[in-house]
Amino acid sequence: MRTIILALAATGLLAACSDSGTPAKPEEKAADALQAGEYEVTAKVDSIHSTDQTTPKTKSKVDEPAKVTRTCVPAGGIVDPTAFAEAGETCTTTDSYMRGGRMSLQYRCNRAGDLLTQMVDGNFTADSFTGKVMTATYFSGQGDYEMTRSLTGKRVGECPAAATAGEKAAPAEKAKK
Image (cartoon, rainbow, N blue to C red):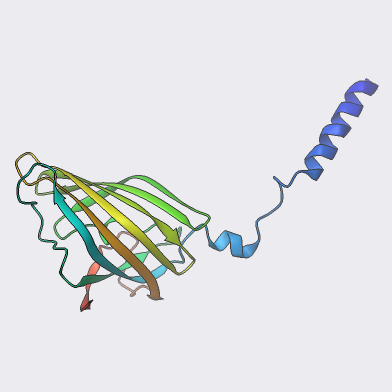
């Protein structure tokens, strides 16, 4: 009996010395999610190349000005997939990881019956994010491509009263160069 009590006491002392039960500091907690609110998202195309030796089936161009959109980030801090999608695409999240200032998001998108995948790799703070978006297409016909875009997002305020958690990204009134 005494051996069991000593073993339990030793286990308790080891657990007390361990930092696994130490609560996170408030500033560390904030790095696990974006603050809810409206974000201005700027996307610039870095590269596009054909994967089937035909003309890529996209309206995006490398030399065009950056596109600016706005999206609402709900409580919980996960950015809606539409913030990363091209016009006319509907996307669903297949995997998401946002912790410790790192984000890795994966989406499956559909554009007029054609399949695309989006992978976002980046960093974030409580009120901003930066990342690379890698797109790959799997079209039933010609035009398959891979595209890389640079993205930045910054919180610009509260979401408009009519906004909901699933609101689509809306074009902003301006484009940046």
